[in-house]
Image (tube, rainbow, N blue to C red; front, side, top):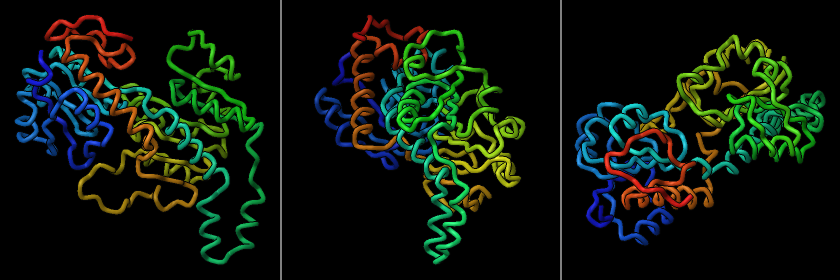
Length: 347
């Protein structure tokens, strides 16, 4: 298929406009995508029905939309998570689904560790003490704090961002423990960092700080419900820069209210939609708690990650439309039987 004759639809054109890095990549390959901003329904179906390829940031692509893509060869996610895309239907339709899994691992680790430090040093409370001229109160609240060296960081999942988090924790002199689905795999980097692998229940009981590094799927949805949160070590802190729905946020607010957990650092949410085009201030109890530090799903962002995701996503697009498989680590559905045969790519 000729790249110049392919119809490439770029969704989320207004909420996430094409970056200069992305545009440079399109220009380099002579590609002119059709930029579209639609939310759902017939407009979305009409926009993608005759597309040869779809580029997407945050738009949901349910089964009825995917089924309408009669010509589509590849869906390129400008990012990592694919929980808003019906992967099973994409695969059944013979469409390759590609992402850029490693584009923001350093940024996510930076952000997760920043949240950890902010909760550990009670920065929300200290800011309020400062603004209210409660200086002595700030000193009083800070005296029971603990230093980080020697404390335990638990990582749930041990992919790229968790490894980057572990490297940072080594520099702070922390003990690092982790759990993952394949507990039997030999992991040289984990060994070199001194990371101890253990079952989830043991990790919950031993972690002073627990950071989530999991995809959202049927197995991880509300994995951290009230019973799981109550199994965490008393006085520990939960950090979530992964996906909001991994945590039952009503339960988290309740458990924080009991004092069982010391705090939380959150960059992803289930109770609010940070991509709502007409958002209002959050009203959930979590956002009224001083011991919860929160940011609006920004852990992935930097100039560097914007460049990397643009380069990787357009490379995936060009590969498939040129008749090649993308890099193996970027194929979300490797068992797909493509509508048009693909030759091996260059890993």
